[in-house]
Amino acid sequence: MKYISFIFFLLPFIFFQVVHAAPAVSVIPETVMQGEPFMVQIEGAALLDVKKMSFEGKRLNVFSYGGKPSALVGIDLNKKPGTYDLNMVLASGETLTKHVIIGAREKVEAPLGIPAKLGGNTPAARKSVVLSLARENAALNGLRSIKKALWSEKFDFPVANPIVTDAYGYSRKTGEYSIAHKGTDFRAKEGTPVLAMNRGIVRFARETRIYGKTVAVDHGHGVMTLYMHLSKTKVNVGELVAKGQELGLSGKTGYAEAPHLHLSVKIGGVSIDPMKFMELF
Image 1 (cartoon, rainbow, N blue to C red):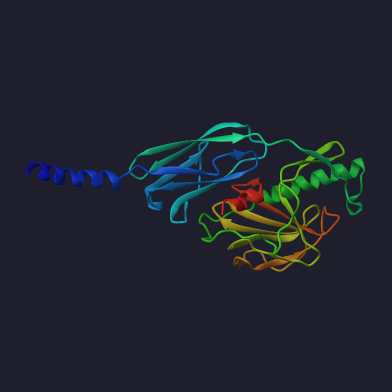
Image 2 (image 1 turned 30 degrees about the horizontal axis):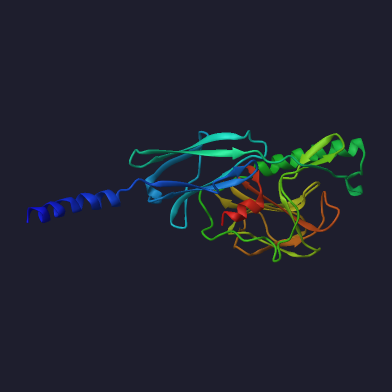
């Protein structure tokens, strides 16, 4: 009888230990390369249980995805390979650390000419293109992002039949200048509907010299999708768009010689590989 009493005495202790198991941190994917994003998720914790999360000392925006506290991190294309710390502080005061290894991306370079509409392959045209590109990037980098997630569903591709014609990450050699291709190009004949990848607010909708007619959608917490070289835009700045809503039509405006859609995805101002971003969902 005393053995039975001893077992019943232990049961509350065992149950207490199981319920209060330490949260587990996952990094998706486990292997991250330069120019790629990753998602952090905490198992065994609620959103309110997470007081702070940071990567390299920079605070991350934490949101709920799939019922788990989550955060998105973008790794710059030129980030030095190595091991970096991901730190979390829970509301209980407990701290968690995860080591994230950033691998080196293969360096690829290819020649790229300047269209006649931008001055052709001359030294003056090349310099003008680089200066225009710097100004346009500065304007896009300055777009604000709302401090909450405007989406709860997974992201979808911006075109109905997503066929990649030009990948992210290689360098395009234009004379003495080397310009990184920080986006993915999709096959899209002139006038193909371009759709919002998720719910968000339009932060930019106008034509620029290099990127052509461009729409930028803020999805919150620093996540931004940009749709470039459009022939027509169909939304206005400040408009709340639904996932799958038509933003415009594909084209070849700006630094483009044939119709296509150039898609860029940014996390916290860092342009990352859109195809790797889609793999997270």
